[in-house]
Length: 168
Image 1: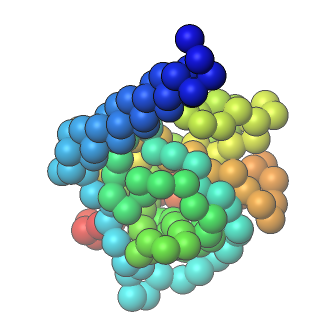
Image 2 (image 1 turned 180 degrees about the horizontal axis):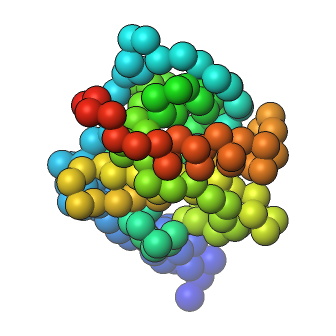
Image 3 (image 1 turned 45 degrees about the horizontal axis):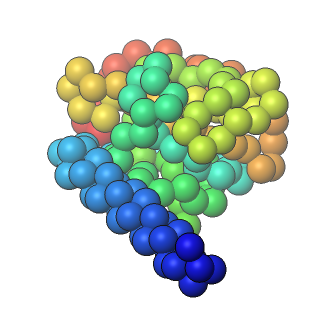
C-alpha cells in the first residue's frame, strides 16, 4: 500500500467517525426535543449571590455519563450562577438565562465525574432538578470564583424550600 492510499484510507475512516458523531448528536437532540429548561428570572427575585461558573453538562439523574439535551443547556459554556431567594439562575454565554425555581430544585451536592469532565474529588456542583413532571436531571457546574462548600449551604436551603404555589 502506498503512502497516498494509506492517507486516503485514514481520511475516509476519520470522515466516517465524524459523520457518525454528527448523526448521533442529531438523534440525541431529537430524542430530547420535548425537554426545555425554564427561561427568565421572576420579576421580584432578590439576588443573594453571584458566582462565575463553567457549565459542564446536564445528564439523566444519577447517570453522570448519559447526556441529556435540555435546551438551552445543550453545550458547555462559561457564565454565571445567580442565587436568588426564589431559586437559581444560570446566565450562560450565548444562551438565554435559565431559572430553576426552588420548587423544581430537588437537591445540590458535590460530584467528581460527569460526561467530558473529571476533576478533583468534590470539585463539581451537581444540581438535581425537575425538567418536567417526573423527569429528574442533574446539571453539573464547575465554580471559577469560589469553592463548592461556600455556596452549597445556600443551594441546599433553596432545594429544601417549601413549595409556595409559584409556577416556574
